[in-house]
Image (cartoon, rainbow, N blue to C red; front, side, top):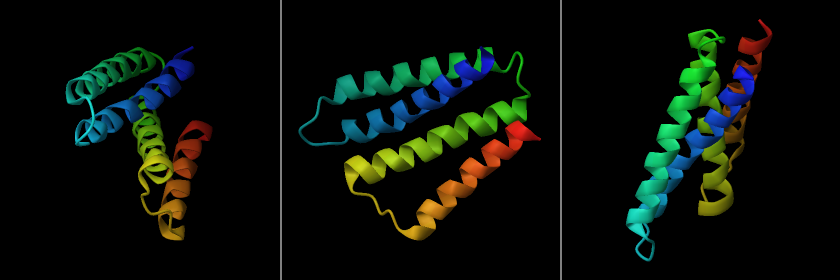
Length: 105
């Protein structure tokens, strides 16, 4: 259950930079997007807190930030036209490899 909570926390970690980005759009609902960011931060942090009861802090934090970083990178590529060059994708792959390594070892 702790690993599921950690994965969900990592997914919510994507929500706050997305909310902040959307709040910067000229035709967007700034207040609503900022609320999304704050709610995402709160849920993400609470689930990380729960997960750390059984998962080592270094592993939990690396998984949490890694999922958030790679997920946000993918949101940027798919929805905001961010660059998807080979070096960025390779770097994201290395982050995922590091997360898997922390879980295995």
